[in-house]
Image 1 (cartoon, one colour):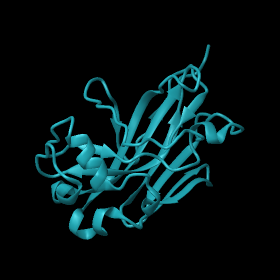
Image 2: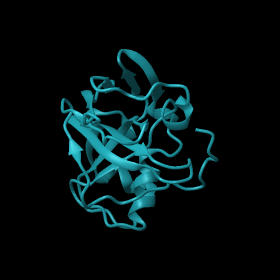
Image 3: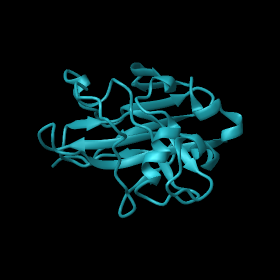
Length: 192
């Protein structure tokens, strides 16, 4: 997206008024806002309490991995944060034992109406899963069931400047090979 690479993982905590939708549910966008961002992300589900853990021990706190797609509408200049509309999660959780160590080497794709908009691999993440968990746990006590998303690869936001905004009926498919797949339809209230 043309942003400088951060020195440490950046994160925000969401725990109030946030909409989580399922792997086959509709994505409901607000009537306003044309700059819609989405992106396939690896979701890390915490399995046991983690506070001030090291990167070396962080993976022992992982229950498993899932597919995530954070959908947001940006209503202002690029430096103003997006308003997250929904987080698509699921359809299942694969255990840490059933995934490569740290979920490295998994192919990630996002398709919009059948066109590939993102193609990446979890080995390309700026910060690996263990580093992210260690960093977050230095500020927040992670509890079983907490979900950490690892960020989205290229193909979202400002890197899609010339893409047509999604219309009602647009299908967004998010896939992480070996983890799962979302198939969501974009819905928007009709304008009067």
